[in-house]
Length: 285
Image 1 (cartoon, one colour):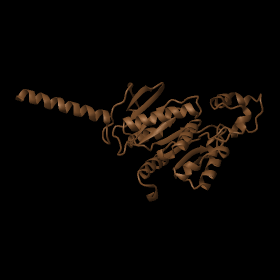
Image 2: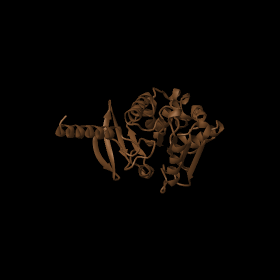
Image 3: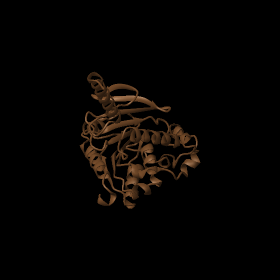
Image 4: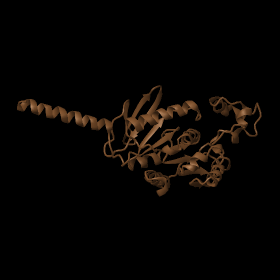
């Protein structure tokens, strides 16, 4: 090979090598994603379809070792301080549209597909942190119960944890049923079968407790949309009884539906420490 051809060959090789790195990514390279690129709080955001549903990935400026990520369920960008803080710590923040599915089988199918895409094609950690606000609590817990070994921790923010607390004392014709009809339809429930339903998160905590999945909930003690005692209060009692680790941060007063903390440091520290611990064998934690 003459000198000019040799030089051209070297350039082609280097170009192909650099392209491969940009697609695969790594602990210090964010990698590339399909779809429309934009900015979200100064970070690169990619919006794209996976099969037939909408997905979103926000990329940190510097990816933390192990490629950690937090999976946001529902209500994108509402009280985003935890997500922004984690981006600054090297976590990806991702979203997969499951609106109006209420954690049903179709929602689980989408999450399974998105999980395999991120872990298989982009090298993300196989143990994400899950974040669910309000009805987002349904999908994070339904998915985690099916995959307890694939979760580093769960952050529930005033999460709804079951339909029975809402329908227990209702009769047909009650105006409160109007806002519950979509939930019942998503799971093929009537009012009577909803009252007898035994597949709520509160009924199926054993797999999470056995896997020692760390949980943190942030809730208001006077929340009227997701009453504390019927949801997080009952969850915490059952989870602790099963040996599951949980931390509950209770905000006092008010009848609104409060989310997050003005300073998200306690939430962020919990998630970062839980991810670090998830990389060690269970017996060493």
